[in-house]
Image (cartoon, rainbow over all chains, first blue to last red; front, side):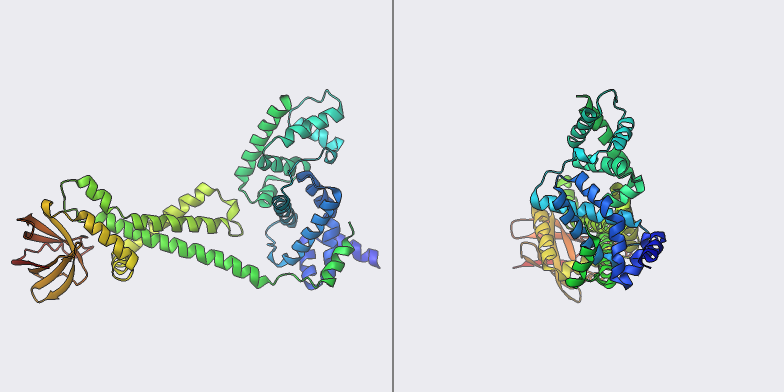
Length: 191
Length: 235
């Protein structure tokens, strides 16, 4: 019976679940389940907090999301909206604690590594672990504003429009940041 | 992470979604402030256009200095401040971030210019400037200071304000505080109007007034240049 219910919800889109959650808070569990893994890895990618801290942040983010559900504009993708809340919460946490935001090497899978190597036009003729370290080191040297766009594009696989909605910048600016970020990355990588 | 824990926390701490009206109110407030800023910016534009096109340059020895003194700085500042407020608020509307900042700046300036020109065409700029001069002490002080800077009897120019009209007599107080009693045609003159006494300085106590010119050329009325029949200076 419970499985049937879960299956029903799997077929529903985010917007429908938001509507249902506003009528019955229990449905919020489906949003949490749908996004917890994605957001946890996003937090870890854009900050250098520990897993425990990331989990605490994620809990705060979900509570914040729940409190602001009535502010959700259905013309926007729900995933963009919740990523935006996450990004803003991580940034305000960073400002509070002055943690340096760095990308963690553990957050780069081999699959992602191949994708990054081809997208950034860098050589793959070195050991994967060394390449991974080099990529991470080059990314961490880039300005935060360029790095987060690169992370959203290549790690989170978001479109330009989605990135624009997440970081609240025009699509043109997203494209500019991405181009500049890639150039800076290449320069750092080749050093 | 256990999603049930989050739900438990929500239930235990009675956390509720903030009501929709709170967000709507915030959103409406942003749009209302934006609209008000555009309107105020447009009003300032109307006054800037009026002042720039209707200043009666009486041509003192240093015309450039006269232009610099007469530039409508106060209204320029109001215009810039409210354009910035409009831009800030438009950027903070729900979809405001989607637009390029330069496009927003350009549109804010263009809309202020267009609406301001319409207000100016209906004499709104002239009326607003006059209301400010009569009712806003701070603005009055700025104008008095400007009047003092333009006061050059040796060059034949004394700026002042009409403080009384009695039949064919007008009483003018210049910006040093000197009071002048002049007999002239009082048609189109009103109490509180800023004017220039144009003439020739005879000595430190006497000034022969040849004509009276308003600070601003009237918007649509005929330009009143009065020929005084009698002049008398008393303090």
